[in-house]
Image (cartoon, rainbow, N blue to C red):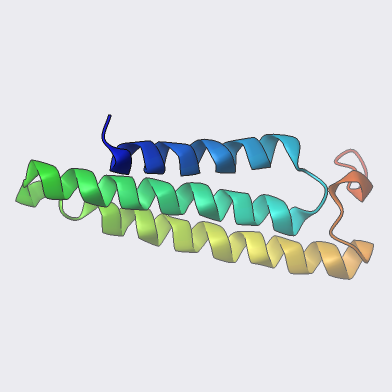
Length: 98
């Protein structure tokens, strides 16, 4: 495994571990998701450059577009949660409550 691949894998698993173990605020969960998506984007970009196929060159841009949509939806949920509940702590959110 090259140092570049190890770095992308480490960033991905650190973001995944942060998402799994550090779930106090919605903003920290969204930041962990963004770190995961950024590592996936960089790894996919490096992979398409190494393969050299022209047909795969749109894949990182498609992933980046989906990542931007995910970020905007997450921020909209963060604002809606902060307005209705007064905080973004995940412990205060109850999915069974209307």
